[in-house]
Image 1: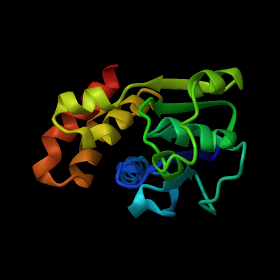
Image 2: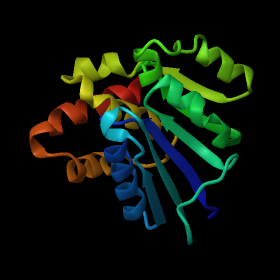
Image 3: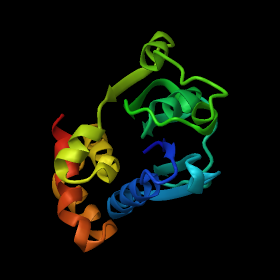
Image 4: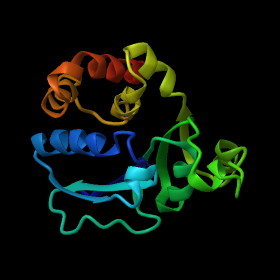
Length: 190
């Protein structure tokens, strides 16, 4: 099997690290060699968070170069645009359409770029953009956006639902388990 590459991108506090942990558990359980590398940046202040996930028969490094990603899972539109150049031709960028203002926009030094989805499509990006916040709220918590996105991502993998549920159970604290399972299920069907 060839090595597959994925980036999970967002801003601090969105649950990108939990998403990469969940995916890593599934891939390891399936017998893949998995390498994960997390880059936090200014994550505690709402800055960019990036996780590289690589899997295959034998993986030697977690590093992914521009133009090599099979998948990018983005928790926010500007982050989707920021990392799109890492997607390979024919790759898929799955993103939440939510917009979270970065510090320059908050301070008035810049404006949030308009029409990002259209610009990405215009660049030939295989874009799967949808509102992940509303189903997360429906599941019981706006913080469950990460599991809605993982549910949507699961549609691109040939793994049984039971594998995803087991990984969720192993990755999420028990007091939040039902909300996260519901968020995942909503993301898998939209």
